[in-house]
Image (cartoon, rainbow, N blue to C red; front, side):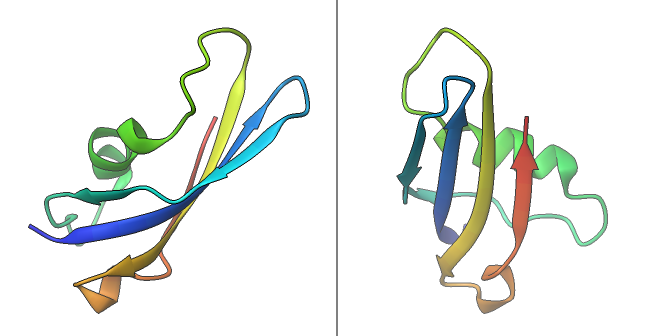
Length: 77
């Protein structure tokens, strides 16, 4: 199971932006459609615990023990 560190820009509708860099062990993504993988494996490490208002998350894998994953990006929201 690959380990990834992601840079997450957590942007909230009140104008607040919080950048986090969580690390997680995740299953390797499929080679074709990765959307489900992003939601099931990476989305859980986004956010800062806010429960009100709208949010947008921009994610980039910045480190991994699988070099092919570094640089992959996804946007939630």
